[in-house]
Length: 99
Length: 127
Length: 130
Image (cartoon, rainbow over all chains, first blue to last red; front, side, top):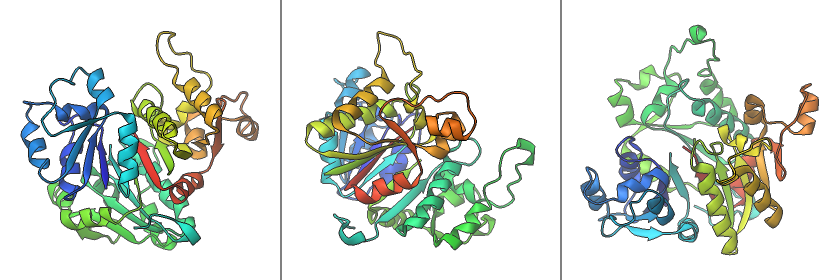
């Protein structure tokens, strides 16, 4: 399954909830304000790094760039553009959007 | 899980509810989709996570708000053959609620079981 | 693949409509088919032709209309959600005795069944919301 998270992890529980339900081997795509979770050295970076052990984590590059976060991405979080987003949707059996 | 829908095989639809009622319209309008969707004879489940469990509490009295109380509608779901209502155990406990506080029979499930249910779905609608 | 999109928020207030649009554009560029874009909740507000956004920023409604025209997309605004929020086509306006209609080109008003069908007929359904 592909999970998308569009909320900042500091103000909302969406990422935390998503990671609780995302099963081993699934993919999590951070979009919109959710891309803040991809940043290094934050209060949630450890949680994200821990999650990388069981799920693939991606961040939508245009959203990172818009927010000036593109140069501080956690190692292991892969950046995709909108075409990459489409590929992820196609590649997984279903998409769950954590709003 | 089906990759194709040839020959009208029913797809597994999951409606994910994470928001409390009345503070926003998502709970009501999500239920409206469920009711319309029921006519399409797909394999429907409803999941209530986080604040979504508040949609099901007994004793909702909206007279003072002058808004429609739509909690009775959950009891009508059975007539629409929508019977798979899953409620997250942790969400209930965190809110000091138990099954007895809810307006309809539900299946209270662990996070693990809920994750399994989600993984089985073809179409996941979040509101 | 056949893809369906559900857009739950209106233009500008949330990023949902932007993300959905960029996703749709990318999907079409990759040769996928967009079966339907369904607009629900405040998403129906993407379907009003009366917006006049600032000139130096994107025109969300217009670019949905243009994408629809270019690729023959089916943009559906939920009738129930539209009625609540005052998005009307000519037929609806007449039916309810309203003195105007405001639906944008390329959009049509229809029932929630169209959303369910969008889920059934497409290979994937992606939700864009708040």
